[in-house]
Length: 69
Image 1 (spheres, rainbow, N blue to C red):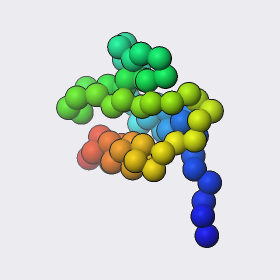
Image 2: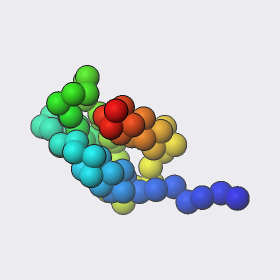
Image 3: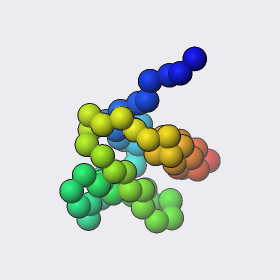
């Protein structure tokens, strides 16, 4: 049973719900997100309507987990 990949816009919505803010500095289809207590930045590649890659979903899920602790 395969599930359909989520869209980039869904990952962005998850980050926004977690309180992560869009930061300046992304080029082209790259978006940069920052959170005050999270070291470094999260870079998300792709247009809003693109399917998210497995590693992108994993990285976003991991970052949200670390932020919530």
